[in-house]
Amino acid sequence: MGSPSLVILMTGLFCGVTKRALSRVLLQLLSLGYGIVRVSPISSDDMRGVLYLGGLYFILSLLITTHPTLHHILHQRLVNLTIISYR
Image 1 (cartoon, rainbow, N blue to C red):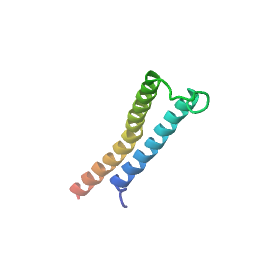
Image 2 (image 1 turned 60 degrees about the vertical axis):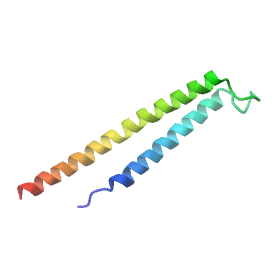
Image 3 (image 1 turned 180 degrees about the vertical axis):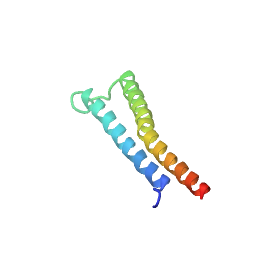
Image 4 (image 1 turned 45 degrees about the vertical axis):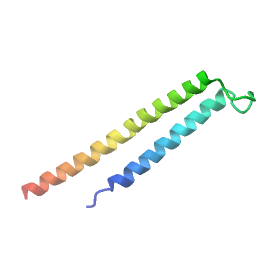
């Protein structure tokens, strides 16, 4: 039985989290009226808040997404090493 490639798995998870975070930031900017109602860019306080929330979402989502996956893979590899060492 093969084991999944950790690099490919983490790259896929990272790309998915990045896509979700970027779409969330763009939705927040759209909800604030950027590009539709307001001709000029939104204020720096609003932009800073949107970027902070987007960064916080990205970090927390990355942790929540990768923790169970890494825990499962590392536990599976540890069990496989234990079985092999007892043989």
